[in-house]
Length: 221
Image 1: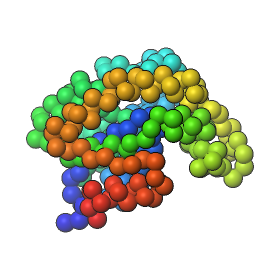
Image 2: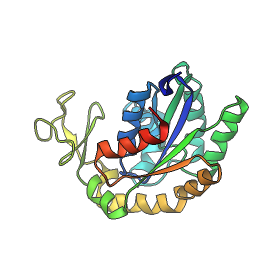
Image 3: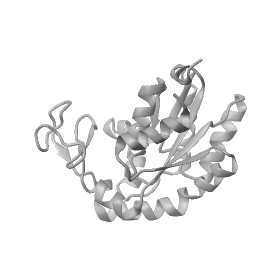
Image 4: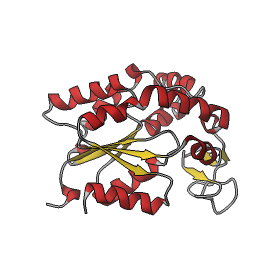
C-alpha cells in the first residue's frame, strides 16, 4: 500500500503567510487527499452572506481569530465526509490548544488520531513582505502574488477575468496584528504536537519546491 492509499491525517502549522496553504495543495495532489482550509470555508460563507460568514468577516477584517464555537463543529463535520476516508490536510485549524483538544477528542471518538503536524517556519519580516504582495480575486477567491505568482494580465484573475484586490487582512498593519495573535495563541500548538511526537518542522524560507521536498521526505513517497 502506497502512502497515497493509506490513512494520513495531516495538520499544517505556520504563521499566516508562511506558505502552508500552497504546500497543503501540493500534498493533497501528490497523496490524493482533500485540502480542508477554514479560510476557504469562511470565504464561501462570506461570499454567500450567511450568518456565519458575516460573523467570521467581522473578526477576519480586524486580523483577529474566528472564535472556536464558529469553527470546531464545522471542521469536525467536514472530516467525516466520504472524501476524507483516506485522510486529509487541515490548513488553518486547529489554531488554539482548545481547538486541538476538541479535534483530538472528536478523532478519538472514531478511534482515529492526527498522524503529522507539519510546521512551516518563516520569520515575521519575511511574512509581512510576502503578504503585502498578495492579491485576491473579488469573484472566485483565487489568490496570486505580484512577485511569486503573477497573473498574465496585471490586476486581472487568470481563472475568471475578474478584478484583483489587496484584501484587508493582507495589509501590513493587519498582518502585524495577525502575527501577534498567532504567536500568542497558535504557537503553543508546536509544543502540544511535539509532546504527542507528531510535530515536524520545515524551513519555509526556501524555494517552494524545496519546502515540498522536505515535506515529502517526512511523509514518504
